[in-house]
Every structure is written in structure tokens, then in C-alpha cells.
Image (cartoon, rainbow, N blue to C red; front, top):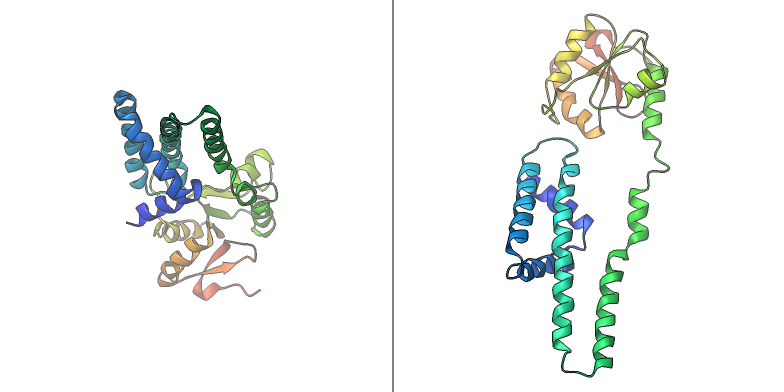
Length: 245
């Protein structure tokens, strides 16, 4: 149920939910007698992508919803065609001028609808001032002890070491293998224990929620996560060896 709710929330953010779904439903009905093979193909693609995405338990699964939005947009386009065709049929008995005016208004409404709220949406997706990645890189570069291991999941640290050529003394470790991501996992603790035998260990969590959900596991194992004062970056130490700042 959680996955379905997550998809519904993202769907509502992508479309004007009620008008768009009504148009999509009208598009399905309109296509059924006209082009059943195309309708069957689109329905198969939509349901296949949707079921697969709902069962794919990864942090950025919303990216895999995009193909379903594209298919839904095609159904919406078919619904617009159905609405225009229906409006034309309803006004067929009227004089040409009023009919043309009615169709013009309907066409204008269809064209304007996607642009409603564009300014707000642009503000939400504008990344031109997002320097979170740069701040993370500077934090790790400046606050990590030499030769330390940094446990992370899909961060930008490889860019720091491979592209910028900075802090190549650090051992950057990907905690999760392909398809093994979990919000709460004992792998953080297991890898910390393993690499602490070799030197300092740091944790770079993807988001704050992950840090909070995994903190109890570290406490139970006798470790403490010391915040480095910059986002979700922590040093792992044994309880008896906590560094005083």
C-alpha cells in the first residue's frame, strides 16, 4: 500500500489529477472502437511499467514512474481528441460562427491547461542554486582524517577523487550492491566494524531519514556516530573512544 500511495502522490504532482485522469479515461474509451491494437499495446506498457516500478524497492524509484507518465500523456491526448470531436458533433447543427467560437474556446482551454502553475513548478525543479553536492564534497575533503574509509551509497565522492583528483587517500566504499538497497540495513554497522580495524571510518548517508533509522543499530553494536557538522556526515567511533570536540 505504501508503494501505491507513493506513486499516487507523484502522479498528482505531475498532472492535474482529476481533469487529466478524466481525459485519460475518455481517451481510452475513444481509442477502444477506433484502434484496439494501439490501445492494447499502450495498456500493456503502462501496466507492465507500473507493476514493475511498484515492486522495485529503491530510494529513487520515482524515476521509473516516468514511462507511465508518458503513456498516460498519450491517453490524455486521445481524450483531448475525443473532447474536440464531441464538441464538434454537439455544435454541428449550430451556425458556423458560434460553432467556431465554441471550438476555439475549447481548444484554447486545452492549450492553456498545461501551463497553469508553470511558475510554481519551475521554482520547485530549478536546480541552478542547488549546491548540496558541492557542500558535501567540501565537507568530506576538509573533515576526513587521512587514509580513512568513507561508507556511502551513490554519492558524489567518486567525482571528488577521480575528476577533481582530491583526497585520493580516502577509501570510498559503496555499501549496497545492485538491487540490495534498504533504508535500514545492518550493512552500515558490519562494514563499519570491518574497516575500523584498518583505520578511521566515516558514514555519508543519502538523506537524514536514513541516519535516524540506522542509529539504533550502531548503539546496539557499541558504536557512536559523531556528526561532523555538515549534513549527513558522521565519524564512527567505539563508545569508549569518543572524540571530544
